Image (cartoon, rainbow, N blue to C red; front, side, top):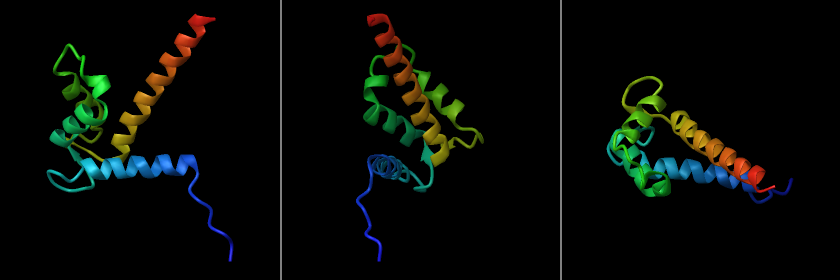
Length: 103
């Protein structure tokens, strides 16, 4: 029987994202979707560094609408991943820009 290795870093990251989604989804309704309230709670707790200095209080509402591709006022896991991926890209781009200007 082949030896099962421990999860690699990428696998642990995927597990963490799934667990994070499930932690926040379902507090209002089903654990398959994030309601608007759950989304706002997620953003203000898990991504507080990105939301604490927002000047426009409607920014999170606008984000929710843009992420909610099927317009049912809930985010499925893939829509949630679009948020995480978009934020990761923005952070990476910011990092790249800062290192380019330091040279």
